[in-house]
Image (cartoon, rainbow, N blue to C red; front, side):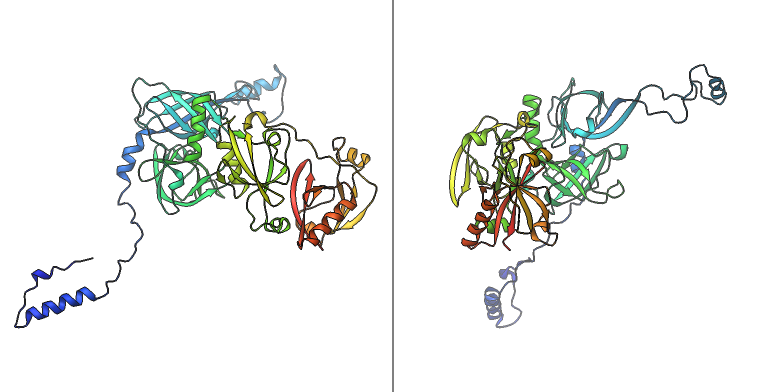
Length: 490
């Protein structure tokens, strides 16, 4: 805003001094409108930034041996008269041409150097299955790379090249500081066209695609095939994401690209550098988010926390955590959803002892859990729940249920000793059907207590009604997988 210097105002007639004084008084008391808030202007050019960081970005070419596809057309025995016919028409190797042996397949991607001694980050899918990996630098120099380690869960891979001179590199930035609307720049090798730069903004944060540890920045900076593994820079030249995927109906960029957040990548890279593999913490529980109707059934003030649906043998069970507990804090950090818990556990060191606060029967309880390692625990079988059957059948809450018998257990392929109530049929107009229950489901708990008979279920419904609740919480198993469902009491 323009400023005035009253000392330079010169009176032009008698009384000018008074005029100046009046003017000064007027300026002193007049309300001054605040400066309008303008959005930060777009950079005049991205050229300086691109010039600074380009030497650290690389193109990646991989080579893989693949089996030959089945040859089209009929097969003829070697020495057949048809061999001469095909040779006459330009097929010297007979009717199958050149497709009898394996062939080489090449793929292109991008990456970036993170240290002067030659460590390079890219996507796992760029180098997966590759026999040879070649790195092309911005200068045109080419070097062979070896694979240090990969993490398919976050689609990150770490490579290493040997160079006789220090390599230009870039640093990771804090992706948690990236705001929606911030400028970002993507670099890479789109469609194999060579080094290329595109710019845009952060369109959204904390996007999930399909992975357990997904934490993507969404951007409208152009990202195409070949950009995979390349860096997404902030305006300080720091890597805030690794370009990984696009959403597109035609395979090309439509302005919806996803970059794995640098804070996730940096932790993975640190473990790959140290161990050559990932080592994530493991709590040993099956969990699900709490829905509003579940919160009402449990008498909770809000639908926050991670509900434990099952506790197999492992660290959590050894520490005294039980199915039906709601985890509200892990290692001092608040847990509002299953996503919060999964990430906090994965980031915690294997073998560390952490405090886990659970809500049990309306009261908080803190337990000390020594974490295991997820990679070692994956694939272990989860035992089924146990209860005793009775021979009855009844319609409750839109369900026709019957206690699990030995014959039903065998028919359903359940482990010996499994107990609960089997859903024989369901009213398709009921809330139970709307919430996803189906015939063949097994009810093992109601109101967070085991059920083995019709009477057990009726008692749990009555207890919920006496407590003034509008629904009852059921633990359902389908194909061995547990899930809590809150059903209205009809």
